[in-house]
Image (cartoon, rainbow, N blue to C red):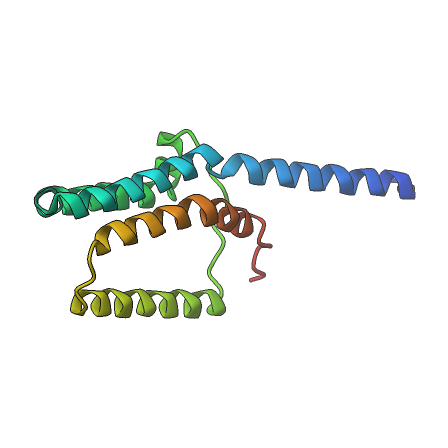
Length: 154
């Protein structure tokens, strides 16, 4: 036999649920220091590529491949366990999210092609520093936004 909860019990349960949801969101994301370290790494890599073009030719594809592999692995269960992060429920992309991703990708390709045609001094350093700042500043915000997104209804 069940009883009807009182308004105080219902409010407390909702507060507890919200607290647990916020805690799970905070635990499943990367800590702030990793975003800052990644931003510093991207900025330093851009400056190194600009100052030592031979290094970029010799090691650039390897470094990019390792970073891409680490990024992809961090989104899988096995990779998350390897990095010591809890696994979380994967949420399907919405149609709007796919369109935004395609538009953003197209803009990046156009910007890269345009930048390769223009001969801008120290372009790798500028792109590295701007990209590093973007990772360090916008990364934590974007992570919180994505992790707090409500699940899509199927």
